[in-house]
Amino acid sequence: LLSGHIVDLQSRLNVTNLLVGEQLDARTVIAFERLFDVLGVPPAQLSLLTQGLLAAQRQSNNNSSALMPQRLGQLTWLGLSPQALQTLSPHITVLPTRTPVNLNTASVQVLHASVPGLSMSAAQRMVEQRERQHWTSVDAFQKALGRSVNLEGSHSVNSRFFEVLGRLRMPQTALQERSWLQRDNTDLKVLWRESGSLQ
Image (tube, rainbow, N blue to C red; front, side, top):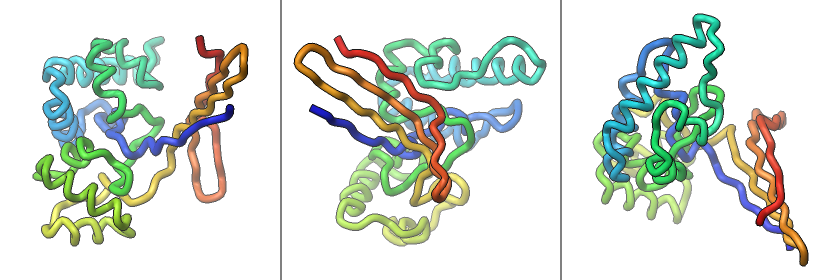
């Protein structure tokens, strides 16, 4: 039995967006604050994450051996607890570059967190409307929202980064492969890939 699925990684808040050089991006920090709040993750966990990112970025710029996290699981290096990471995992990602949130695939929680002033009930309404017809532009989303909000650079209606998960089940064993892909027009690049047997 062969099965699998694809996840749009730009449906999530990107941890990389928290930094601009050696400074925190205030707009992104607010989005993460709203996400942590709606998911019930203590604010202290966000403080650990942001301060850890800043420290790692400064050490990296000083040619230190410290490494910036490249995957979600590595955020525990910065002090994020395993429990917080498990709660946040469906809604955040770590990508190699800054990315906008895809309005056509973001969860209710991510829309609420990333669109300024959007309540959870309004975010739910937008997701329900999206299920009938995806937005062809950020302007179309704003028109459906019924008010003007600055989403320039922070949101889009398409994506470049995806996770592909495949499973192969046989009578005696099961194999799984997970890949992260970057797509630029017709150019497709594998960022990383891991595989192994499932117990």
